[in-house]
Length: 260
Image 1 (cartoon, helix red, strand yellow):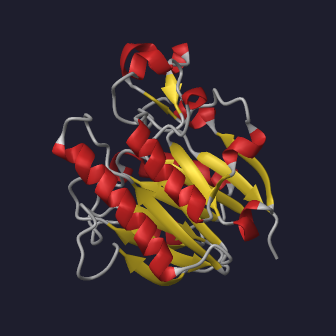
Image 2: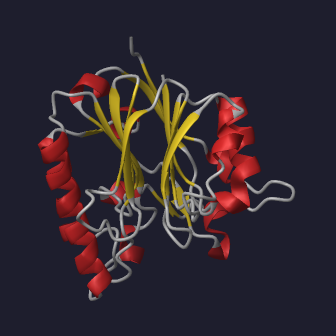
């Protein structure tokens, strides 16, 4: 089974690019972030034509998350709960082929002295509580998406360039660590233990071509899935410019699993 997460930075701008990529790479489950679409505008039909079911959570302004599956899609839940705000359409869950899949877009945080940073830490704490409320580490669970956190210094092209900034601060990494302690495994590190494989590059200053990136798009799996992981990679080709299309600043993270 092929599980993919991809921050597409506007599905409206990149729908054809995404569906073309799907035709080539054949994901079984594709989780998207930053669709920047409302639920009413989400192109369910374009994905249905390829044989996929969809679940989307978006308000048409910013953020927006989706799960797109050709192996079944049951019990979709948008947001943390009906009573509690998720800071703007940042999480959706559904069961696909027996796996409880979560597509998440963690708040950016902006700067460590910002109320947005405090909100980011609160959102991550709510995510940990939500997982504890809805599943267990012994269940097949996937939490994937744009975490806006580089787990360690090897996940940043130059740690000194980001000193004192968000994405690399100790409280953010500690919040991510609590998710791992709960029972999730950052499976990418099994295949790239030395790091320096990135999933995001700034549009500015030729960052992609210089290799000035970060690994902030993560695939976190509970042990029943992590132990079945056979490969994990970033599709850098999808980040390259194509004729008539400006790519997202993120590349897809592709994980292959052996599942029944």
